[in-house]
Amino acid sequence: MLKTKTIHDIIIVSFDNVNRFNALIAEPVKEQMKSYFAKANSKLILNLEGIEFVDSTGFGVFLSIMKTANNNYGYFKICNISTEVMELFKLLQLHNVFEIYNTLEDCIKSFGSS
Image (cartoon, rainbow, N blue to C red; front, top):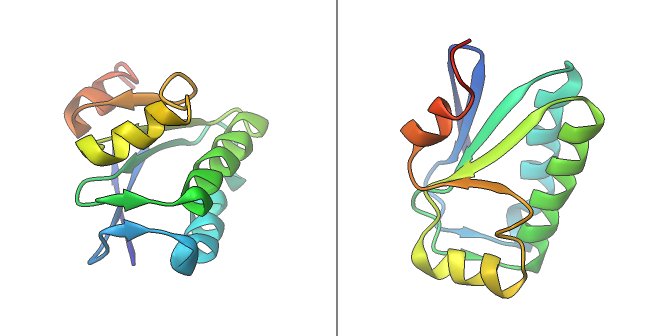
């Protein structure tokens, strides 16, 4: 469901063979992503490439992960949001809450040199 790779000290998480982030998969995704913040100062990028729909449970997971990141002095950023999903972010006024980047490369660069 999720695939993970690390570039420098940045954990990059993306969905594998999933195009909808909804209540059916929200809990395992949340638990797995929160586990990356067990270590303080973790840097995590969620690459939403290929995700065409996010329901309210999915947005709740994003907020929960951000809270966990903040509590552990970590960083949580999102990239590659489809036009449709970005409309939902804007509708919910969440585009101002999260650090969002158009591409994975821009998102990685936003951390500066490590």
